[in-house]
Length: 193
Image (tube, rainbow, N blue to C red; front, side, top):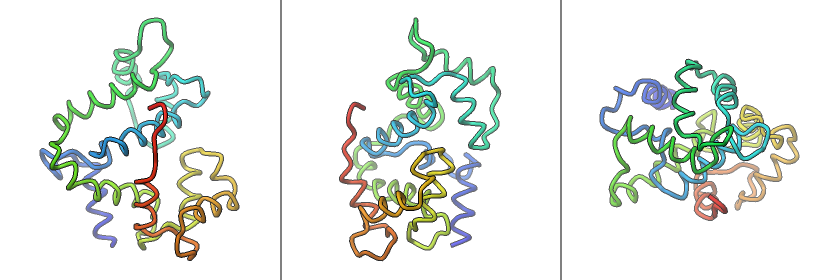
């Protein structure tokens, strides 16, 4: 498993590791999952909850994630998508920025046949974000660690995290396997996105 994780890490940090193919971490090819993930990222970046992401909030988020960024470049890129009279990006603006960055870096969206073939891999990529030790299960401790890293209040309470695990844990083993995760993700409806 360590070799697989190292290969995934190289692919994420080295665009040349898979020429001509979009990184699964950048864009999910399943539209509903992509919209859900973008909405979650948007909500995480919108620290003050005002429905807009300012340049300062993006810079703070990038810094917290350990991603170095040039403030002038971030400002220039983001401000090109901010609607006149607004202080920051609304969700639709954020989605347009994400789409433009993805198209510029990796080409346009994949064909419909590709979408179907890659849906499961997208879900596996999302699953691996939470399965930090790579054992094929998401434990309460792993979920809590990821939620805490993202600054979500649910990450502060192990009882709340265990409740979240229990809501999708069909075999009651106290952790979420890939099948349970996949069923949960397929059942998600994105409202207002």
